[in-house]
Length: 166
Image 1: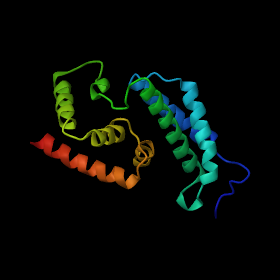
Image 2 (image 1 turned 90 degrees about the horizontal axis):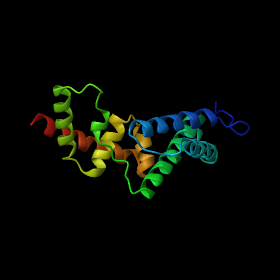
Image 3 (image 1 turned 90 degrees about the vertical axis):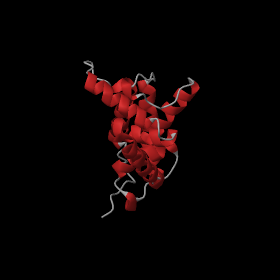
Image 4 (image 1 turned 135 degrees about the vertical axis):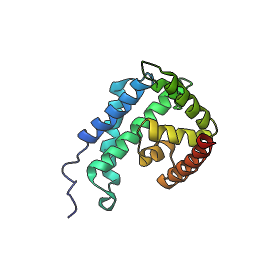
């Protein structure tokens, strides 16, 4: 049975989840954005999802979340571009407060291996595995298909495997 979304569109929850996730990412990596504005953009994105909702492709909540997250990421990317920055992330920002020699060596090896990847491969790997974004979210942020993200991710993992086992 297809849910009736004509009267009530469930956008508040998905918009809030997307905004919290994006604001947490910004705090973690020291990106300064207006968290209220990110929430507004996510809220608007989730509301706009109603027009494109296709019941064969998932729940209304999933559709609203995807649109909200995409809108929020686009806002953050545009805000960073205006400030002359990019969404590439230095993995050393994830270092624990108690650095150890072993942890430092592992981060050094990982950063060295990541430097062998193309910028798009590096970005896909960092967003997926360090920041926890789903393939669909990365695809929406980059404006490509999820299949392109999967292919890029596979190629990057093969390169990383070669670099880390050599």
